[in-house]
Amino acid sequence: MLEGMRDLAQALSIALFGFSSGCAWVAAIVAPNTSYDRLDYSRAEGHVRVLLTSASNHVAFVLIAASALAVLAGAVGAGIVGALAAGGFFTNRWTLAPRKKSERAPAGTKARDKTKRVVAVSLTLIFTLVAVIATGLAIARI
Image 1 (cartoon, one colour):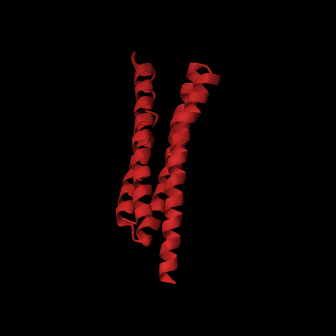
Image 2 (cartoon, one colour):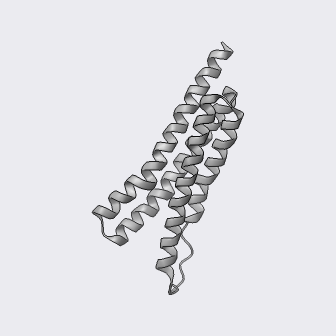
Image 3 (tube, helix red, strand yellow):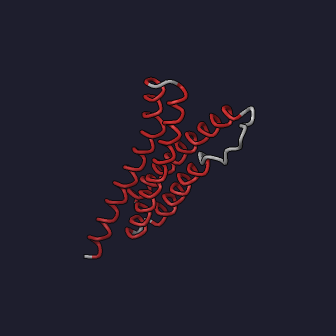
């Protein structure tokens, strides 16, 4: 009975790790490409920022659930790596957080906002790779 529950926890953790990787890929690559193709630059920029902020939170929660299931399945390494990936996705919330607006914006605000978005997309891709590694570790039950 206990072995069956471990196998179920392992299967669910693998599924959730894979789901989070797919969601992150869609949020970082597919949706922004479509946004910049279909919308003007400023609307696409705003859409991508909101998309990355909201999707990162959901992906992080799925990764935390997958990490917990991996630890229950005996794949402690996958749980640790998955928790690291979840922490990385939480950083997008801070990277793209709106700052206090002053009465007059500084001269380089647009360039700084674009840099924040580029950093958030880069972090998303890096931690997607970490989630894929966690998937492999969960498969091997490491």
